[in-house]
Structure formats: structure tokens, C-alpha cells
Image (cartoon, rainbow, N blue to C red; front, side, top):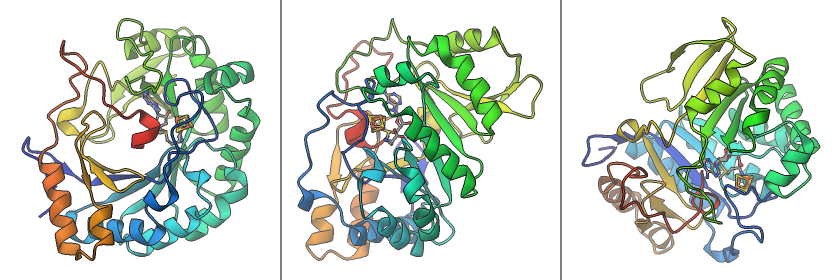
Length: 328
Ligand code: SAM
Ligand code: SF4
């Protein structure tokens, strides 16, 4: 039996965080000082990660595996994590979400290890703005990472941009740059998962505001989803074939179609970004439990997945962990 929950959903998409460390400090995610360090022994090892991947694919119906963090490139053993995981992934895709910093030096080993897809996060193509938003002046390094990923033949290369009040003015520039560079851009509404707790519903930029801003320079038509569970609504740009994606995670929640299951860097299952309930699998991995027992605990964790994020409800409570600590 797969990872079903009591609201009728089945999880196929596994997000595994591999670290809390990061080379940036994006204001919508991390605190300025970074997250508290996870003791090394508390992090899952490549062997443990691959064991969970194998159980997920073989016993629980996982079809997509994505490594995230924190910044996955902060782990020196990332290629080993990917290689061991790809070896047991069967037909499942093995992908990663990254800020791209240092990717140019690692992409060849990661592709050789079995990485097949990549999302790179980039919110602005303006260097000063990037430095303010991420608290680090590293935009040239992100560009180098994107170029290297293109050279390595990763297609389509997806770019994720979080919508902030002060990125709105540069949104059309980012789209123009994406079209010129042959990458697929997707904007994401900012969620209340910033460690600084500055997010406010009445100040967030929603998808409608973004579409207005882009429409001053582009003609956007025929919104569609690639498949019913895809969170992004794809708009044709100037008649196509290029598109721009919009993920309205706050204003048009896609919780009813959510097919995700998450493992934190410390090896707990988290059924929802917004639910603080976590189930420890690391303890089972390290105490000699067999695969069937681990699969049972994982199933039980997902059965209790909450119905929705509840952001629009009066009694909404932010989760304790921020995005970088969960694994976005
Ligand atoms: N460090 C990598 C990166 O930035 O791509 C991977 C981890 S990051 C937490 C994963 C994704 O979550 C990124 O695309 C990031 O932009 C997004 N993200 C972070 N905080 C967010 C928030 N508060 N709302 C929406 N997306 C967020
Ligand atoms: Fe780091 Fe990614 Fe969070 Fe930015 S979004 S601080 S790059 S983990």
C-alpha cells in the first residue's frame, strides 16, 4: 500500500532535505545568522538517505525524488547521496532544488551520479537587489551555475522566483532574461515560512498582482496546468511557445491535489509544510528496524496529513520550523 491519507490523497513526490546550511540568507526564508547547526551525527548519511529512497520507491509508490535544504550544494557528499539514491530509484526521477552557487564546479559529478532535473532559485537579475534580498552579493555565481547546468544538458531548466513586494518591479525583467536564456520561469507566492516572521497576508504580492505587472510588457494567454496535480498555472507568453508559470500557493491553495511527502535533514517524515507533526525514521534506521517496519511508520505519518494549510483561516498558526529548516 502507498502513502495515502484520510482525505483521499496519495503521495508520490518525495522531498528530502539534506542540510540546514546555506550560502545565502534569503529574507523570506532564513534568519540573518543562519539556522542553528544540526549536529553532524543527527544528519542522515548517504547510506540512510538511499535506504529511505529505496523503501519509498519499492514499497510506497514514490515516483519523484527531489533533494533540497538548506542548500544541498553545502554537502560535500552530495554526489554520493545522489549516486546511492539513483541506484535504488528505479524509474523515479532524481532532481534537486538549489540556489546555484558553486554549481558550475559540481554539475558534472552530479549528473554523472544520476541527477536528471534541476530547479534553480533566482528572484531577480538585478545585482544590488539580489544582494539585499539574499544578504549576499552572489548573483554572478548563480549565473555561472545556470550556464553550467545548461551546458551539462539539463532540460528543461526551471527557475523558481518567490514573489515579494520589492521584486515585483523587476518581475518583467526576470521574465525577459528567462526567455532570452531559454529557461522556464515560475513565480511562487511567498508563504509564511520566513524565519524572521515578517510575512503578512495583507502585504503579500498575489498572483493577480504579478500578472498585472507582467502584462505591462508581455501578452499572457491561455493559462493551463501540465497535469491536474501540477501546482503551476502556465501562461503562454506573447502567443507562445514560451510560458511563464505562476504558483499561487497562498491565494489558490492546491492542498486537495497535494502529492508530497517530506523527509527532514534529521530524518523525520513531515506530511505537510504547515504541519508540525513529525515522525522519526532515523531512530528506526539506526536501531535495526527492517524495511517493512520503516514503511509502516512512514505510512502512518502520512495518514495523519492535515487537509490544508489553513493560511486563510482566523486560527492559522505558523509552523515552528521555517522553510530552510523543513526543506522547500
Ligand atoms: N536553497 C535551495 C534553493 O533556494 O533553491 C533549496 C531550498 S529552498 C528552501 C527551496 C525553495 O523554497 C526555493 O525555491 C525558495 O525560493 C523557496 N522558498 C523559500 N522560502 C519560501 C517562502 N517563504 N515562500 C515560498 N517559497 C519559499
Ligand atoms: Fe538558502 Fe534556499 Fe532559503 Fe535562500 S531559499 S536562504 S538559498 S535555503
